[in-house]
Length: 380
Image (tube, rainbow, N blue to C red):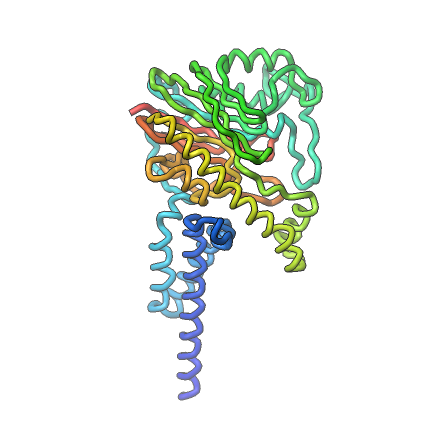
């Protein structure tokens, strides 16, 4: 009986220690985006795994409630501490405000943010891309490039598009003359910076911003007269990880559970992640400084952030005055990038001013390696 009691006490101590370690890892992942990557990138890397730690914490809570309810306080308190980051990853806006995304309202507008992948078609689980088919029937009326057809069908009032070449008839990505003409009719106004474009059905005055040093990052901005409200809209593409085909194959092996060399993972993946975190932090500061210098109350920043919600770069841009459209109008978890098993939510819409987001949707369609994001805004 004495031995049994000793074993029980040791088991409880081990369980409590395991719960404490899990709590520490979960909290680190939850608030990793608060740490400047220039200091260390370890918290930022942990932040990318936050949903996994939350799931483990919930499993631990269920097990603890069954075996020892006092220990269950540890995962329960952990989840309470992590509630704000949880709202960013898993918002529960169950009651939708009106108007909804596809409803017309004279006091609202719909914005789409979309990395269009150079109008090409992404081939899942491969190391190459292929051009979008020409002449394939995409809808009942139009043929041609499927990405352009998707945008024409959704018909947003504002489009923030990344990796976006010129839209003209071209056989390689399958753009027809009819598509190019319809696109121009839909968006008569625009502001472009290399691969970054702001399209609008409202009048736009282009705003020249100082660009990031990286040749893979851009800001395209304009003052848009949205229903009589001057609004600064910025389409952004922040630094990507820059993984090679070999890096992607390595990541697929990891996610498949195959044995991998730890040193190789550190050299190929973690080092590139760390570099990208630092570069994005600098780009975010550059953008935020310029937004502040323009002194415009209504601002929307949308695009491919190449990082998760509540990351350091997003926190720098958002400051204390921006809201995340996903947090305020979305419901449930989502991911906007789907290539090579990298299922991450990296396309975001931030806003401030006299508007509010009433609906958010990530459209599970299209041929890009990203999914398009749409937000319905209403003027207060």
